[in-house]
Length: 134
Image (tube, rainbow, N blue to C red):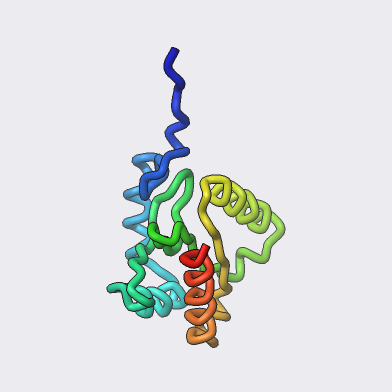
């Protein structure tokens, strides 16, 4: 008897993301926040220690703000609405779901990215080193 595979649990770069996520991700890439744009300028073209990051990347049931497949690292940039009770519940579930897929999720606020980009990049570098050294 053959096992039925859960389409959302696979090792591909997209982890079984639904087709509809791809057009939504494209739309989100065209209207990134200031904080997302600042971080993207520092991550694109393998600028962070040679790691390739993708922006607004469909993965599993979600769209990650940034994703590095080699590190299995999701970076989320949270605006003010992430402080609401409802959004905190949604974010917690998203983190749980992605981590259950074997991914690491890290979150930064818009304010942190905009005021301390170097510190954010340092944190990402340290996390990347931890992941690689495992």
